[in-house]
Length: 228
Image 1: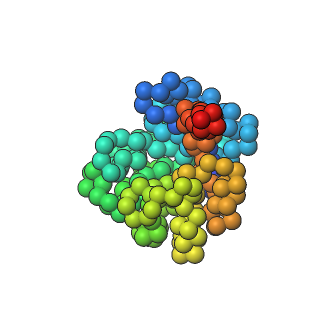
Image 2: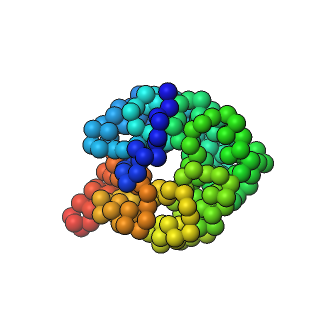
Image 3: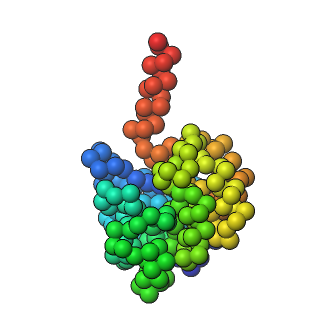
């Protein structure tokens, strides 16, 4: 059963992205479900997971689950087609995250056509992972319910900032009507707070909370530099 009002549950809150890359020790739906449960204990207002197995393993949680399916080696690989999006919905996601850029999609559909097709299939909300203000404006026009800054710095339209793209959040907050989820390179609590201050509706953090391999390298590199 889908949650009554996922957006209200996410308002002003933290979404924790629980993902592991292929071949990693934690790449297992049961492990990701346990990580998600631990994040809820810490106060997460929502969870973001990748892959049909992970979505099914977390669909029972009492918070909104943002589901996506990364597939393919093209530029557009986050829930790249309508079929992928329908499968994410069928797995139990409350919110379906799709590539929200203006780039060509593998199935030849526009983002608007993808969203229209999803509306006929599910009542789940749709989050557009954008890379620029123009992406966000186009995604809003196409009917997306939520706009994310997920792809800022990865599509060539904006520089890859060392932290969150606060400027993009501010631009989107000033021009867009839909809720904005700040996502991408948010590595500290202070940066998460800055994203809210810049106009984000909610903040999504992944690597800094749920990716121990990366976090370990941060500390290991710091120790190595100090030793040198």
